[in-house]
Length: 83
Image (cartoon, rainbow, N blue to C red):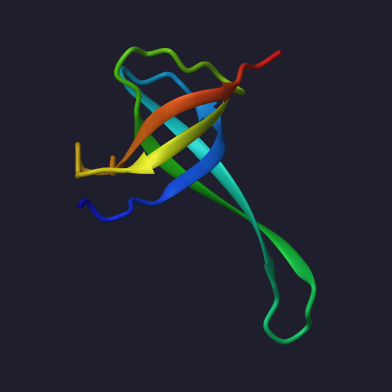
């Protein structure tokens, strides 16, 4: 059986590239010393085969094999379209 691959949910911040989107994933993390909850934003380049994603869409991405120098994720589905 295939190992579980990581899945993340984020918002598309750039769709200017061909078959590639930039997805910003926001996570909440507590500061180790002060206890304040911080919002961390990490950007991933994800493969979008049909160029279906648009700016502002909420998408789910999955870990994949290296597709190019910076691309290691692929878009699984579009959860919510931008308004």
